[in-house]
Structures are given as structure tokens and as C-alpha cells.
Length: 412
Image (cartoon, rainbow, N blue to C red; front, top):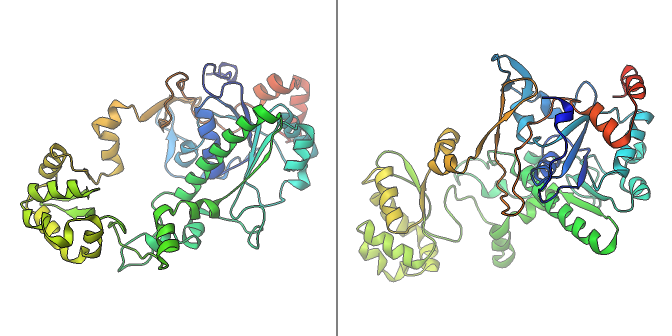
């Protein structure tokens, strides 16, 4: 596969939109991966010789066709499909000039430097908007562009703690727990992508781009959802409930005869059906448990009876019966078991992408499925600088002799 084979794809929702990606690690790259999945041309700027920090976040490493480790980390592969990698030294004036020219030819710039960090390079919003007034410029930071914490770096783990998310995650008898993936980064990437799409739509009316300010802290607080309102309405900070739900009962994990399952009773009719199925008919008519509000108030009295009933049969037996009765329930899979689920296989959630180094780069299919502009075959995440020459020649018209000079001087 050559660089020139990987021309921008046609017929997708964002075909014709060019995104200049100055971000690294996860939140920013996740946003640009979403845009790339929708057909945008994403140009990822990376440091020569080093690249995105996550390139070194292994093992595990991608293997080539001969089974040898390539040095491409699984972490990097997770957030960088459908992109072109251009290696440019942002600290060098000639490198800055190349990036400014790419910004002039782009619709979107996304960056996750500290507040004000790009001004010294002439790559901040005001500098680039003066060159390209139609530019949508998205800044992702830990705490936003203003406020007393604006200058601080922000990381997913610390934001999970600071936002209160960890205070409602984990067993009430153990220490607070972070979520098993960097979900604040992922949610920040998704929110950034939504804001970028909104700004592009606004540009149709005004002809102007705009500045987008997305903060991990803001996203984490907004993502507290019902737990935030449980506090703001009720006046009491929610506590950790393990796998239980603060507002619905029974809605948690339970032990079965041979493992565990999730029972997610969402309304009173489902609860009555569950009681009949579990031979707990007396509970269905008990005034304490007739409504969800009553079940929440009396969860300590109700749950032991539910738990005892579920231990009488295996997980598979219960799931079959609960499904037949229209009562929401499911297994607690490992990630391997999740990819082996018939639904995951039918939906083609595991990708196999031919990689430029040989072999196959695994991936996970985008959940965004559009009927009139479906995603084409995804491109494997790029190697460092894989598309430098192709992009500089095609978009900027930089001649070979000039590219050779820039390479000799370590600028690209």
C-alpha cells in the first residue's frame, strides 16, 4: 500500500471537510477519529522521530505479517484510524509555516495544548483565524480557557476524581474506583466532535468559523447525569452503591447458581413479571414494593429475597427465562466474550485493517451507521510520518527539492 493509494474517500457525510489534528493521546484523537469515520480528511501532525505519546504506550504491539512486533502500540491503534500522519517540527519556524499553510487549507483545527501554549508558535486561534476566517478551531484542555484552574494540565484519572465520578463508582465498602477505561477522555472527544459539527453547520449561515472550548472537567461534570441532579435536587451527595442503581430497584448484578447476571427491572410491570417468574408472587403485591419509589425506599428488605431466588438456577437458564418474559437482563462478559457474542459477530464490530507494515491491524467498528452516506472501508492507523510527502505535495504543492531540504534539516 503506497501513500498515493490513500486519497480522500468520497460519498461519506463529511467528504470534503479537512481536519488538521494537532492533538495527541486520547481526547483529541478520539474526536478526530470520529470525524474521520464520517469521511473527513484528517491530517495528524506529529513530532519527527517521536510522534504521538501513545505510540510508545505498549505492550501489546501490532505484529507484521511475519509475526514480528512492529512497535505500533495497541493504544495508538485504538484512536487513530482514518488519518494521515505528517511529521513536522512545530518548534521550528519552517515547521510552523507549514502548519499555518495547512490550517489555511483546512476547515477544522483541533488541539489539546495548555491554555495559550500555541500562541508562541503562531498557531493559536487568533493567529490562524486571521489567515482563515472560516476555520473552526477546537481547543481541548483539562479545565477550559478561563477560571482559576485554566492553566493546569488535566488528565482523565485526576478528572474522574475531581469531578465526583469516582465518588459514585465502586463498592461502598472499598475505596473509590476509576472507570476501567479513560471514559472522560472518550466522552470529551465525542463532545468535541459534536461541537465541531455544530460549528460547521453554523458556518453555512454566517460564513465564519468560531472557537470551541471543551474541557475534560466540564464534560465529566455534565456526564454525571442523574447523579448530578440527585444531588442538586435532593441536596445530598450520592454515595457509592457498587453495581446497584440509586434510582431504580432491582437494577444491579446478582449471583446465580454458577456465576452472575445483570437484572435491570425498569418499571412496575416488569417487576411483577419477574416476581411471578421467580416464584416471588407475594412480593409483587406487597405494598412496600408496588412502585419503584417504594422499592428504592425498601431496597434493604427486597434485595435479599431477589438474590436468594436468582441463586436457584444457572446464568444461562435465568437469561433464557428473563428474555422470554421481556425482563431486561444480561451476562457479565469478559471483553473476549463480548467480541464472541452473536450480535457482535453479526454487526461486524471487530475490524481487520490491512497495515502498511504488513499483517492486519485490528480495530473496532464505528457505531455511527448512516443509511445514505455509509462509512467506507476504514484506513488502518498510520505509521509516523507515513503521509508527509503525499500531503505536503498534494495540498501545499511543496516540491520534492524543498521536501528533501526540510527532511535533511529535521523539520519533517
